[in-house]
Each structure stands twice: as C-alpha cells, then as structure tokens.
Length: 184
Ligand code: XMP
Image (cartoon, rainbow, N blue to C red; front, side, top):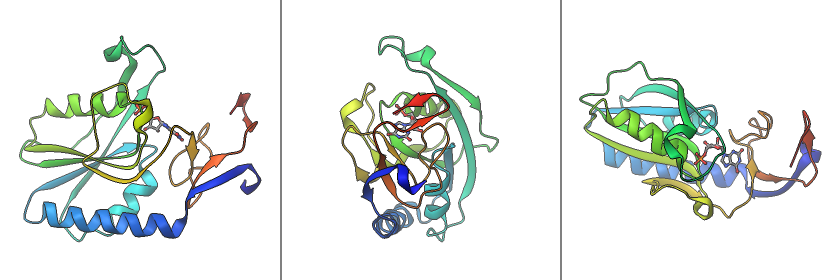
C-alpha cells in the first residue's frame, strides 16, 4: 500500500498534535453544556475516535451517513441523500458534527439542514481538513485541523474507492493508481 502513496501532507505526529489542540478548544467551549457529537460516516471514523478520546466530557455520540453524488452546482437538494439517520434526540442538545473534510460543502450543508429540523440548541461543524478551493455551498467549519489545497487526499479516514482509510497520515496518491477500474 505504501508504494501507492505520494507526498505526505500531514504526518501522524502532526495530526496527533492538531487533534489534541482542537479537542482542548472543544472541551473549553462545551464544558457544562449538553453535547451530542455526530460523526459523518465513513470518512470521520478515525478522526472522530481520536478526537472524542481526548475530550473528557460526558458527550453523547451518534453517526449519520450521506451519499453525495457528483452533479451540477445548481441542483443542490437532489445531490445529497441521507442514507442512515441519527437515533439520539438532539432537541435540548448542542450538536457538533464531525467529518473528515469540508470540500464542496454539499454533504455537510445537507446534514446541517436535516439536523436543524430536530431543533437542537446549536449546530457547529468540526473537520479534519478544509478544502476551500472547491466550495459550492456557503459553509465554513467552526473547528478545523488543517487547510488543504485542491488535491485529492487519502489516509486517516479518507479513502480512494474505500481503501487507504487506515493509513495513519494524510497523503496524496501517486498519479495513475488504479483500483476496480478507477484511475486517479
Ligand atoms: P463534500 O464537501 O464535497 O464532501 O460534500 C463529501 C465527501 O467527499 C469525500 N471527499 C474526499 N475524500 N479525499 C477523499 O478521500 C478527498 O480529497 C476528498 N474530498 C471530498 C469526503 O468523504 C467528504 O466527506
């Protein structure tokens, strides 16, 4: 697997440091508040599990899954479909959505729209990576570990064709990698 990896953008140690900094901020901001953390599957899994273990708060935890299909920027609503919804009641809770990357913003915009319907006390977004260059929705993360340029990255939860999520760092794949007939 390591032969497929090009430039490492964020090493395991760098990620560990940043996750710890963000976790400490969250602990300050959410101390004495009812907090429900909602991870967006599957990409948030690694980040989420490291983040919450550095937050000594009595948080509730749940997950949501959305499929976002490539499409035109003018047909927003139909492009993202929630395929697994939360089970917790968030009515009197502050909600923190955790995801791997804020890219076009389609996924998180739709997740926020859906969760707003349950009338939580607040909704904020925490992402590992922020890729501003490709944004198609008006959305910015409240908490972010790293800004990245317009490059397709894998590792630490991020995948190419569902592989590479278990890499402990974030990296760019080498050109020409082919999996199940997809070529990057
Ligand atoms: P947006 O913000 O475009 O992001 O709705 C939707 C999902 O797309 C995935 N994504 C990536 N996955 N490398 C990846 O492995 C990337 O560079 C990348 N950009 C977007 C990611 O799962 C995100 O939640």
